[in-house]
Structure formats: structure tokens, C-alpha cells
Image (cartoon, rainbow, N blue to C red; front, side, top):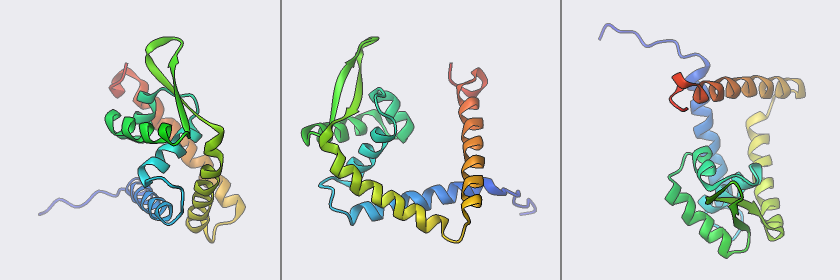
Length: 155
């Protein structure tokens, strides 16, 4: 083959980092007693980071099928960790919020997040960490803007 591989620079590295971070996070979650499956704990963490979102929006942010999310939310609701209420602006939609009972579970999940973060950022200075977060935030903003424009495929 005469075609040479393109220089992907940071793009594929970020994809690889996302995969590695997710794998590390899920492995660490499996080792912590939350009383939840890894998928349920991940769902709870997303609700924590995005309180009051509609179920459909959570599924989109998590990149999971809506029915998969419903199963996780059903389990979290049975455990008393989340509630789903009717969206006052659209009776067909459900808003997801945490209950106070989620706090101890979230403390364990937060420890996992902070441990994985510390491993990933080992060797970086505080200024480098801040610069990295600033750059990643800009990248996310760029991609989010592109996703919501007509040429990005969403209305």
C-alpha cells in the first residue's frame, strides 16, 4: 500500500485516553462496594454531574441506548438513589434527580474518580493541569458547537 498514515496528532491520542480512562474508572468502580453494577454507578455519576436532565439527554451524553439507561435508572430508583419526575414543560419527558440517599454512594464514586484522576495526572504540575483542563474545555466547546449547528447534523 502506498498510502501513508495521516498525522493524527492529538486526535487519536485523546480517543485512546478516553478509552483508557473509562476502562480504569470502570475497573476501579468494580473494586469499590457501591452496591451497584458498574453501569449503574456510571449512570449515577452522570446524574450527579448533570442534575435535573431529561432521561433522553442523559442517554445522549452517556452515549448509551435509551432503553439501556432506563434499566439502570430503574435499578437506581428501586435503590432509592434517584427520582424521576415529569418535566413541567413536556409531560412525556422525565427529569432525573438524586436523592439524599445517594450521598454515601457518591462519596465512594468520587474517591474512585479522584484516584483515577491522580493516576492520569501524575507528574504534571498544577499549572500544567489547569492548562490541560482549559485546552480540553475548548476542544469540547468546539465539538459541542459543531454538533448543534445545522451542518453538524442536529437541528
